[in-house]
Image (cartoon, rainbow over all chains, first blue to last red):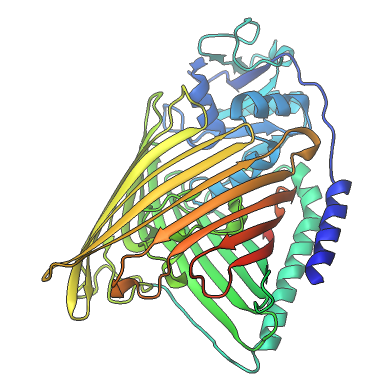
Length: 161
Length: 374
């Protein structure tokens, strides 16, 4: 009887807890500080950075990761085309990374592309991403090419459909 | 060293038990209420030394389908704290508090407190990380090398090969010693791990201090790869060698495991096969224990993404006549259920479990789990 009540309550909560989604941008650009010497990265290594499996730049400095919320179109494109996880799985992945002792903290979540550009420009060891047009003219950041493809290239790997 | 306190058949224990679950429920509710605010908040920047503490908690309720069966409850509180002293040095400690008992007989409860991990780590680069202290051996992969916390796994159950030593598990999951690991740069995603610690003693669930007299060393080697060309795929193998000094006889232990996983776009597939050989040094007997599991789950997209239906197959065959594994039982079970992530820190799981051979209490059961991360 107790189990039945719990099952009914669970079903009710489930029906009340679903959400909808919006369209992602055409592509996202990955940013590093203009002082960073890296200009190109493989898609595999980029994914490993955002999963915490690669935690340092070539100079030995720890990588500081910034991400957009999964509620943003950029955040969804990032999850769908680079990390290839849902927002729930990505969040729990980072809970596990901290629990396993491999990372001191989860990535910082920023609320807008402007905030992302400012954060990356002011943090020498940072990496983040924005909708491709937003990265255009800030001298404090550099846009990474992925597998030697830029965000405007037709075969850039992190593109929406 | 593991600290274990078991309280059995204690008449006053029901009040303690009720308090325990009340505290769990209160913590869960507070976490659930705080999650909505925390998701949008920006975590502060890290300044060394940085301390971080967290916990996982769960309650499992089991209802056997047979009329003669008894409802059963278990709960775990898994506390951990880490401190990052600098960019290279850190420390981590983890304590697991576990409770189990039957719903009908609140007095017949059991509490365990175990030190899971306590180590200092030095990590000058991604190519090398060294941990010193009480660590996980890594002989069993399960959902990761540090496999505790049922919140971080999809199903309710931990497969038989990944059960802790103090919960009738057969494999050596912990030791005191050193573990070196790292990632080899390149598109193959090769990772290695090498461990050296104290081998097992006469009691399987007692982690032996490495410098205790009469304890033999144990070694472990682990290798895995996750190629860029197949995003989400990983495969690897691990081997453990040691010498068990049990009263009246000494045995060589040689364990090997092969594991693989594929996690991409909502799909989760995990499998592992493990073999354990215990050979008497002064005798001719050799005992072989084998086990494996397969886990498949899928998280749909869109409005149903909080749900993750899963199937787990779990098998273990214990060597006949092996006294060292006298309390380890064969396992031949499957379970099918759904994990529902109400939020990123609160999950509800329910499943049907069929356990054919010769489980202590159940054959078929309906189970539910509430689990939280703090």
